[in-house]
Length: 593
Image (cartoon, rainbow, N blue to C red):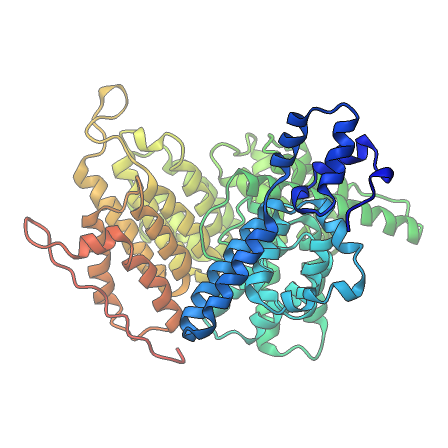
């Protein structure tokens, strides 16, 4: 029914004519008359109506007509057209959704909101709601939708939605249940990686995730298999916050950018703040006034490393002295700050952070030895051997004889912590402008051999660190045929041999580290990556010899992503003109392995 003209004002009429599809309203002409009677030009009124026209009712009528035409078609045809209609409507919603729209929905009567329940039963609509909330984080309506989806158990659609506690609580419970029930091997690895990524999304999710894991580990009803897997996840969370590298995400894509490093820095400092505050509260509660300074020293070490600032060597020595003065309590407290332990290890092995004084070096060896329970002599020997290797132009690791080439191997064999330190040295030593040096082709093979030794001797503790070293070397593009100042550099033949040695390492770790290795190699097939056609054929031919199969299903799924890469397909399809024909791997699946 048209609104009586007597109740209209020029201001309200102009405002009405600006609303969407005002021209379709029965009272439109009454508002036009009220607006023009106040002096508004007819041109202004017409332009206002044109701008506000979107014909949403017309679009709805058109969609209804399409759907009506489907009545006599096949189910497959109906599904296809309905999918197109839903996609079109969703795009309209994504473009036109505003907080005012959300508030209008929230103010509706419950009897008008029956469509919500049906929307939350359709996967396509739920995916749209997740997409919508990505750009409207503060929307109460969309947060409500996601909470209802979590309560209904649609956790597979909510990965990445960790900023809402209610949603994250349900998501984490679902992920941990999946982890406990996963098949041993790659399915377990993938689910653990997904849970790790969710927990590392923010300091609060990390703390809550750790608290839940500790609760489950203490629960006597937690099964042995689940307990081991929860412990592995807890340990990975600790390590990931120390290194500035958040590792492999849920989909297996490698690497951590600057945002991830900032997140790790924020998380490390946040946790140190929490521990420092908790210790102060504990002392006040127990009436203990004495403070040996351990908390403050640990906090300073963690803070400086997180900010990548130089360490105060006097404080490092003092920290070791405080831990040594109360061995049991000091070591227990120091273990709660593994980032501090990493700092001491870097002051022993990292060429750019190495301790300048002998006293600080001894303090570092003592601290790491006490906190990790490792062989102090092996740590010292390994660090000194690495420093001596830097003065060589060539080295071949060996067990027998004298010299740093033998010392570094014997030390690595005596302690996994020493081997981890050697990997720290290897990565830093071969980084930067090292590929431009004249000794690159003669030193790198020895470093790669050390990485292979570490991964082979300590597969659980050192494979990830060794992989980082080899991946860094594989990505490097050394100066070919001429180094700095016109000196002779790496030849193409030497560079090819180094790349092949890297590929043999990737093949070696494939059974235990397949997802990161295959993702890295696939990445190197694209763009300016270093995996050319000859190296692809080399890798696949060795794979065919070393792994006749059959394979677990999840391994086959990962490997097929690699062999289906266009560059791999092209390389394996070539023959003649010097190219050796290499057959595509026979990826036979065997269940239960």
